[in-house]
Length: 305
Picture 1: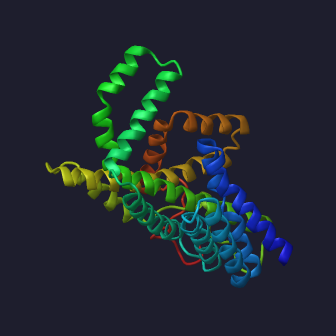
Picture 2 (picture 1 turned 60 degrees about the vertical axis):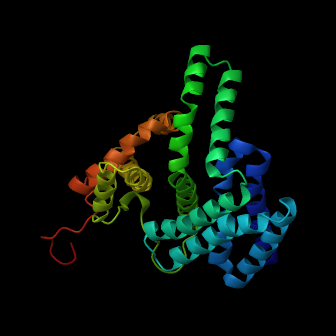
């Protein structure tokens, strides 16, 4: 048990530290940081998991001069615990992801508010300015650079108002990656009891469509506060429907035996042009209406069908 726990702790620390040492390129690796500890909790129980979490918080606190303890707790330990509990108790995937994203989002926003003496909007403005400067140094067309500089104020205002949704996206992705990765591990090493949920058959509860409609309706109210609330809510709910759309597309790929090269090209396009993710949102919403995969119970079905 001891070597397994040590390996899980070291792997989690390496993955979460990649964000600090490799910057943007390390962020995708950081999404997997909770997975080794989640698997440890699933295999060995709570005591070794808690010991590893305490050691990890201490190690990251030394690396980041104190702030790392909270970072490890909210971004690694909490997601690992929720994923492990959600899989063993068969929680709905959206419940698992939400239980990770909500506290992480709140903690991040509070931490940013407390640690930025000039305020969040000024910090966002600095980030926008740095992005424009980076684009210019990489050889961006001068006309485009000047246009971006002229719109820097509007971009800053928009990014500042959408900051809650932006932070929530990170928490949602962290929870989804941890949940799917830990489930994939269980699929290869099945234990007693049924395997928790099938990702390709997953769908949001149908009443969630009203949340999407309500968020869109807020954007029509002629008040800035309503626009801010509606934009953030719409972004978060749309991301969940994008996951449902991914499940629809992946299921179709599997049923039609689509060649792996075409699948890879499709996912690569989503990474290179994230705006194409709107296609996944539309697929998820369309699935609520049509049930393309036939995964919902039919009201006219006899028992056992």
